[in-house]
Length: 164
Image (cartoon, rainbow, N blue to C red; front, top):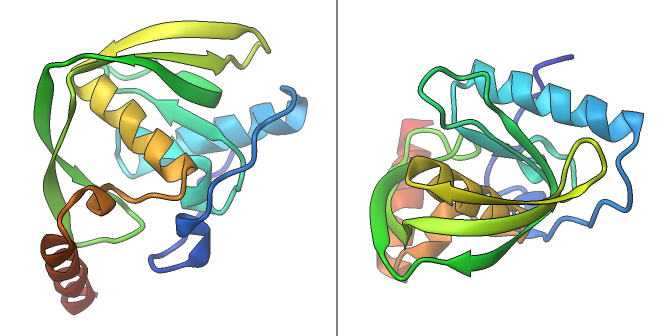
């Protein structure tokens, strides 16, 4: 296992949709293990493959209070979103020095391919739901600030640039 370096905004890979994972192999399991180690080193509550230059639909999420309850996902997709929204401060190691409050559904149901190669389904609520939606955005070539108005997005990117 290894902590992998982050791709920095505006790298084109962060704007590109990741490719689906056809099957869970030892190589995929190794990437997922590296992603967990990288996420824990941030520290953060989630990480998507493109953030570290892996252009596969892989994501890890662990928003538990005690940590060590990571969910490793390939090809995650949202099946259902709650009508109730929640606002949370989001950031990304790919654009250090910036964050923004983003409104997302409070709960989501996600289908994914597990590390064991089994199609699974899980309900995420609160911070876990925010994190999994944030990671799926990355897999689709979107950053959290793409959910902001153009003016707010430009201000945020400019602010981050000044802090670099």
